Image (tube, rainbow, N blue to C red):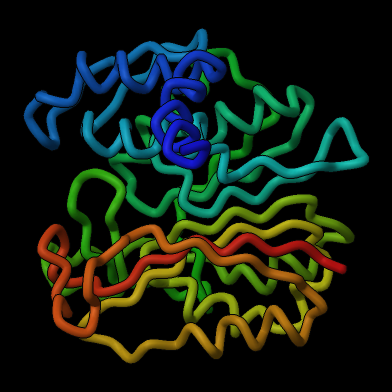
Amino acid sequence: MHLFFSLIFSGLHKFIKNPNQRTFLKSALMYGGKERYKKGTVRFNGFKFDVVDYLSFLFQYKDIFVDEYYRFKSESDSPLIYDCGSNIGTSCAYFKMIYPNSRIKAFEADPRISDVLISNIKNNKLTGIDVINKAVWISNDGVELSVEGADGASVYMKDNLKKVESVRLKDLLESESRVDMLKMDIEGGEIDVIPDCGSSLKVIDNLFIEYHSFTNAKQKLSELLKVLEQNNFRYFIKNDYDKRMPLVNKINIDNPNMDLQLNIFAYRK
């Protein structure tokens, strides 16, 4: 009986205790029915942001502000953060809320999205953020991405391909003595970029990786985790796509091109 009431009231408790949960539900009511891939404006947590897709923003807000996937602890009040896949800047806003004096390198590959990112940073008077309009990659030679207009630009998709500039993350990390937090949401590129970085990851204290498994590419989760283990990281993994009876329901009906998405949280021992 105790378990029953705990389950019933846990959602209500979160709603009452967490103001960001209330903001999310309010935003879902306001924006959840909007047409996909249409520009608009949203207000949240004292910010006013331009968005390119309301639904993408809602999921970003839930992950970042409600569930706080990017929360980390630093001994410095001005930590250095590498935000790989900044999109429109929701993550930058969160980092500035928890560490106002943080220094952020914000990487966004899609030039159209990068323009919105820069505008949101400027309009909300967020300082200490350096925007790099390049894809985080394994070379500086550029890379072809499938650009879908919101937050799904991927090297592993083949529609709407566009050549964009790139920057090798390994080279950047080797120029740093310490990176307090590296957040990586680059839609599949992580399975190439993390192994390429190798021992250069030793300068990172905290790491968040959104792992994507595309049906047209080999799964390389074990290779990614091996690199983390070799660099003395402890990791925790959460499934971002829950699928009932996965041995039967092998296709993700919401996104048939992707059969697994995981959130990997790691910290150096």
